[in-house]
Length: 479
Ligand SMILES: Nc1nc2c(ncn2[C@@H]2O[C@H](COP(=O)(O)OP(=O)(O)OP(=O)(O)O)[C@@H](O)[C@H]2O)c(=O)[nH]1
Ligand SMILES: [Mg+2]
Picture 1 (cartoon, rainbow, N blue to C red):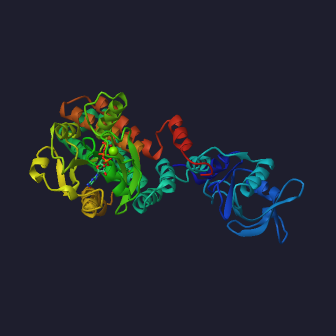
Picture 2: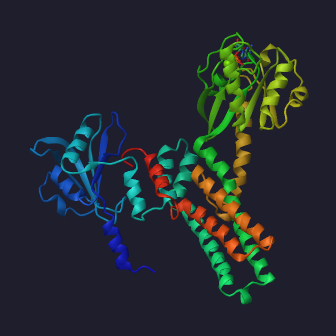
Picture 3: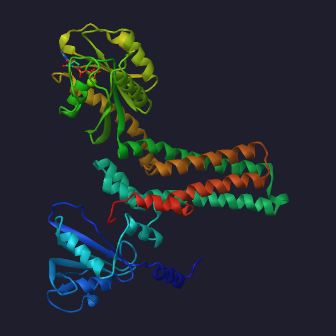
């Protein structure tokens, strides 16, 4: 147990040099905010800010807004502004901090920042404010990452997940799992110390059961990751089919804009076209591809290759066939390229006639999740298609939502966390296999120590420094 005064001392020690950055987006806007943090934050603020009603800036209470002017070292007025001081440890970074709200726009905020830098602060690196919050123990790594996710969230659902993580729900859950694992490790270690007393078959079985339960909990978190990833990055939906069936027309119709070039010449689309759309609050990344086709044209060949590659990562395929043209060998080839990915069959050009029988098309596909007739050209049937896409995602989401409600498991949405959880699960599995095969306790313990390390990476307890640096480098400036 660390005595309180020590903690206080640590907090004082990690007050870093004084950093500053513009925290609002660059561009025309009503207000711009310059943020300052570090051991001299308050004296830097005092050097550049003159309160309208006089009095020393240093004496201003925390969380009290003051009105005044930003002045340069000659006393010239740079801007009219509001100043807010936050004293350590009660600030975002845990250090003394100040925020100057000045006029927005490209020039005004930049001039205020320059004045602040001239008064002794240095320009912050991307993510440095949040990194200090992490180093000062205000938030753990998972929470810091949630800050980025929240700022970048493109839909309400993804923002909710990020907010949940920022509040520490994931961190608390991971901490519980870690505590349980530490408890189990202690029991294994006790076996090493007192082998005669502890290492009975019954004892081993009980420990194995507890480990197995723990691993199930880790796996359940991993299962939630699919939902989390979709909410963060969007479901990958690939539009595939032979040339000229109307893939690009379908892309445009779904986007409600003329994004892709449409012509009656087969082989119009040569490259992948990617756009984000939102179906019932669920983000999706829609990909239009070159028609899959044997061809001698070198450019089209590359396009076809890319189409095939994009299918590998598809989470849902819209397999477009042409109702007027009917099926041929090329459709079979497309179906083969799609393989076992969930496939919605879209029979296009409904307006030109009904040649295709549902079942013959469906039979081509390994994993059909539905079939729908549309006319991409005039929008017929598109609402049904949208509903079917949304239905497919909702089905997947419900599974994780059930987890969330009954077990109060948070959703994991970060690739790094998924990787750490997978590693944890693998090491737990190895330990379980060790128990089953009657391995010596010290060997089982090695796997458990690894599992503990991997689990601790999520909150940042056991993560390498270069990884921490990389995480924060991904932040925007001023965060
Ligand atoms: N009548 C009718 N024509 C359509 C429909 N959808 C697309 N077309 C026409 O079919 C032709 C091909 O459309 P595209 O959208 O370029 O087809 P694609 O599958 O992207 O073709 P590639 O990029 O060459 O593989 C165009 O002339 C479109 O106007 C439809 O619903 N009805
Ligand atoms: Mg096209």
